[in-house]
Length: 423
Image (tube, rainbow, N blue to C red; front, side, top):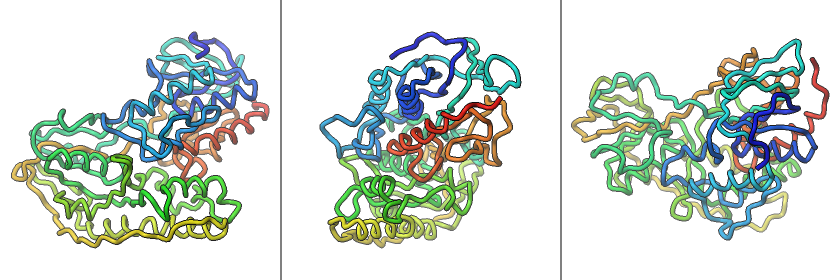
């Protein structure tokens, strides 16, 4: 890598050294723009380092192709474990010779009406003035635990999925996993296969098949992302969302474990996992769940067919792709509706909250945030001249915060940076 010292003045500062920040660095270098990447951690690898021990990508390895650094491994259709994807992100910085300064958390970003440059960033290692700033810290900042957790018995160990590492580190006994997006479903499956009693509290989250019409689901999503507009079948864009809060909804579940497979909540229940509805409230040892299990399972079952299948099938037809027929088989097991459990009587010792994250942009001293705490922007271009964002969920469309989506968004921002900064 390049720079190791913090400059006092520079053209562009990129905040965040994960794949989004490094992708932006690659585009800035191509444009000949002097810049520095500030990373709060002491080592590179991005947020992948925070995942649990047995974590694997749900995207195939070929998706981990970054601008200037295409996937070059020998298992394109496999699913990388945590340490491999973190190492690949760190290697990317070396490949592109990114000017990274490690161990440098930005404590404040402000825009000045006077001074040598429009922006000043205050860090634990000093200040830096910049003409432009790209915030590339993603959209998953602070683990969110619902207030209902405060009413649980002190006997019960509680932790967020952010802090979960492996089942052996948990107290003996059963585990209540709250949340059925990607992390919740994979952790529940891991615990169940380890012989734990698992109760999975299911929310309003969809699922997608691992493979559809002969190809991995991400092959089709990549096709819609790269060629969809050509055939009138682009990925859903942020403008199509009926509610802006859906930008932060959980990702549909599937798994990259054991060579990649579907995750079906009904099959979980049939295999012995206790599946219940949305976590409602707690009173010591007693936990109550909403009577919405049947509706939530139905939503999960229909999600792919409603949201993605029509676009994929239309793309296949219009692009003349030789694809196999849909060979998915329905699984109709109907688990009982349980609305209350006594955790002590059920032998449950631990609650793992897979309840997502909340945004934390408190360090940005600018009035540019909406009711959800997200920056107001147009495809990453903020209301403040010279301030940009990269790697946000739904920055442009559903692919923006994925491994294969950030490159396209970074290229678009790089073009917009050519405009002079207004003071």
